[in-house]
Image 1 (cartoon, rainbow, N blue to C red):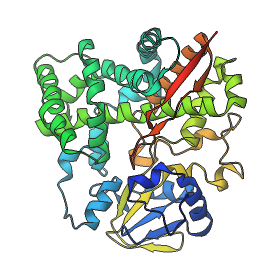
Image 2 (image 1 turned 60 degrees about the vertical axis):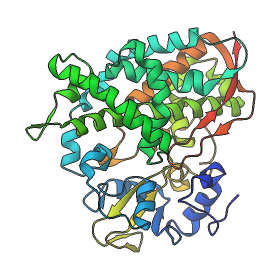
Image 3 (image 1 turned 120 degrees about the horizontal axis):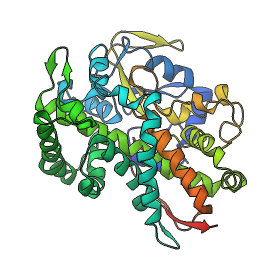
Length: 401
């Protein structure tokens, strides 16, 4: 377990341990912490993270949106053209103009129409599970969100397994952690594939998300080829990785906290509560980042123009000022659990938040209908990532009814 002095917020290995001990110490002693080794601020409190996220006129995403941007600036990277980096790297009003291309398809009101398709995907995946122990990540946590989102996006059914194979490279691109092999897959396989799908829809649009992107106009101008492919890839990354982590964390929590999971497997009506508490306690996205566009005072501390801030969502979601002295406890009885910032806050609140909730809830409802419990039966392998909190391997066994 690291101390504050030993913590390396710019190193993915730090997040493999128990960062919550450090987060707790920071919230109590130095909630807006200057991380000298990385040259950026670290925000740990719920209110501070909401303030920074909710004021894009003070804290920009154009040059700094994720941890790798903070590292790049420290290494001397100059300004980059944000246009080809996707909506995650846009500020108002440009961000809202691009987001509204597809936002109506992800609204709460759109979810009932999507539920039958999502449930169909979940049922097919569960029907294909083997008896006995199996790998939850590869066979459920990755497959359900990628299949469901591929269907909504408009990817042909025969290509869904290919999208799953590409998901690691797509996620690495979203996290700014591309290896040479991932970069080759993105440039030689994923990008050309998405472009071929988009190009086909420009001449013959349908009712899917790819068609919306292909024919979209922003400020009276169509998206160019790079913008369209980047948009589609951003949606794929966001639509799969966050939900994959949520589904992975949900399985872990139900296995770990048996005092509460027994109740869940006896009452499918608790599924929504499980989803919200997993989002709070587990928190799929470990951090995002922003850059001050002027000198800004937060918590009696002045953040200078140009300085970056790392926003630690998992820390905010365990803030005792919000959830009391038992904030570290996984508790399905919380009445205010949905106030978490697992999906961010403000302008960049996760576009697919309602879809992620739907997929996780439907999955749990179908699990409860078929099984009496879930148990982790081997050694889990956490993913080495500074962005997504998930496992690479999570062997489980489902107890038949």
